Image 1 (cartoon, one colour):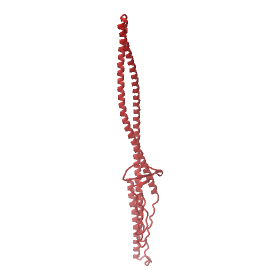
Image 2: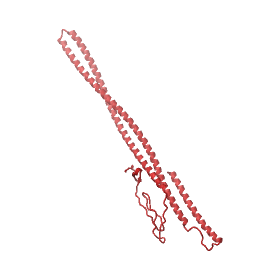
Image 3: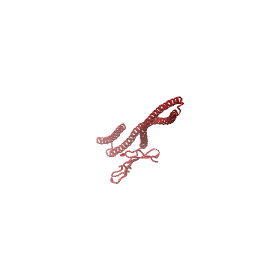
Image 4: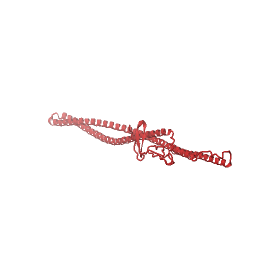
Length: 320
């Protein structure tokens, strides 16, 4: 943008220099006529001096200066919009890259969450199986204890079959001991399964918190990318509108009309969203111009209109 302003600043003095050279030509023409009259050359002493009218060079300079200034202003606006479009487009691409990164992080967290949920379901299934085995072992232990009690009762009653009953009692006691050992081992396994379930529940809670934070950040990044893309599209539409406007030839200012040098002349009308009146015309004439507001409406793509306020930043809102 600075380079474009520098080029424009170089082109404006060249236009002024050309106009001053034309003025010098007019002055030289008048001086040449004065020298010719003084030398007495030719038979035209009785005739008036031939040349341009007085003040015509200054008028040409004024008109050329107006055209040069108008072109400079139009080019400056177009250059500003183009630079804004380039900057906003770059920021939109950066925001899109950040949004893609956030989406990738969200996908990774989603996979981790699904894996932990599957492990939790497997752990719950294993716990249910262990509980069923515990209940079955408890029933077996109860049945064995009842059998041992019955066997001890038979020992007291069946004195004649003491040896056989004693052997049966020993066998039942051994079975009860094994059942008690199995019961203790099963209780230990149930405790380990409960501890594993508690750990997985805590880990799942932490991962869910991280997942919510990641999803929130991803949504914010996506919203920022959409706002940046909308700003870039609006800047592109504004730059295209300015370029098409600058492509049209600049109107030649109309000469004002006045009576005896004191009449009211008519000048060109003011243009622009926030422009004021433009002065032109004959002596004493005043031009009429339009009055603008603090902000301006920019014509967008497909007839959409967005309001731009230079003193307050907010995202573009589109409406058909």
